[in-house]
Image 1 (cartoon, rainbow, N blue to C red):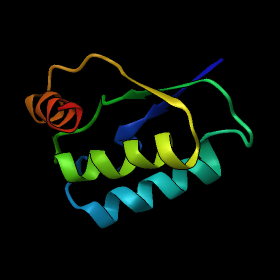
Image 2 (cartoon, rainbow, N blue to C red):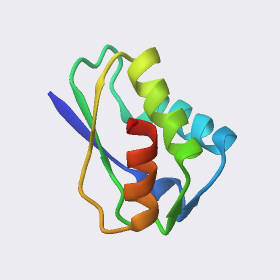
Image 3 (cartoon, rainbow, N blue to C red):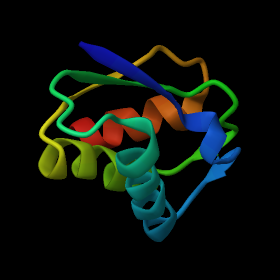
Image 4 (tube, rainbow, N blue to C red):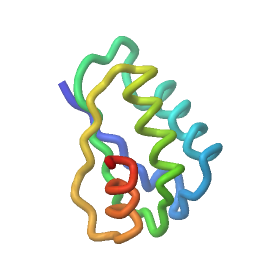
Amino acid sequence: MKTTIQIGKFGEDLLSRPEGREAFLVMRSYHIPKNFNGTVELNFDGVKVMTPSWLDEVVTGLKNDMHVEVKFLPSNNPTVTESIKAISE
């Protein structure tokens, strides 16, 4: 089973760790079904700027708190691709 989350719904400029934590809490409450067991795909359409700290908060929450697999959909945005690379190292 998989679900896709439109990250652009959380804003165009995704910058700080506290904002990332807030976004994760919203995802957990409203975007991912309770007892979900599958893959969460992150779609970055609509994002202009993203920092690794924002993305790290979201991904860490999804993996550690919800125990789901996280997949990044392709993006041409260099701030997104570099953030993904930074947290994947």
